[in-house]
Length: 247
Image (cartoon, rainbow, N blue to C red; front, side, top):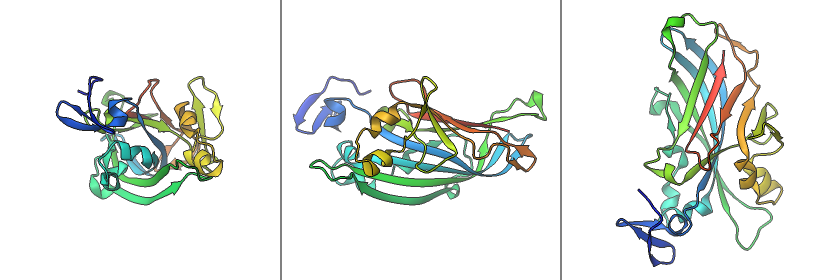
């Protein structure tokens, strides 16, 4: 367990129970933001008897690579892929269903004396997602599927904070704050690159829920689906995000 009783060894490092940890954790115990934009891509089936949802889920992520360098030893941040840290709790397809897509870095614009490197990546989850269903109600008139992304608290979850956003240009997605009010722009790239405003972290801190109407009323394999919704818990730090869709 990491507590606040640390002994400083040299700038940027400290000692806690024999483990060297970065100054960002030791001195300030700050949180590292991981920005997520989950979206349901395609349905391929639902099985009542097995409680199984099948299809493709798309996840866009963004992280501050400059801050990540403070959480790792020099040079190791290049080998750390946030997509490998995520747990998708309901997915049972395994590694073949995890398809890594785009991956690139960009700098703040306009350039400043202290530039931040932002890492943007995407992963597709294709396959079967097991659901907990009440068999006494079978067959179902309505069924809500729940999908959960998390980072275990015992690993990077102790410092990483999940924050939701709607990807830039997605007209089907709406973000809401904890009072239920809409937020116009929540994609970090809108502030750090297009607007030259570094307040993106503050904007995404405010996002409680994102809702996509892309699949509203769309019928697939006997199911007519409603809105896709993802929610961040009302806590100072979140290491999990839960998404739901009802059909």
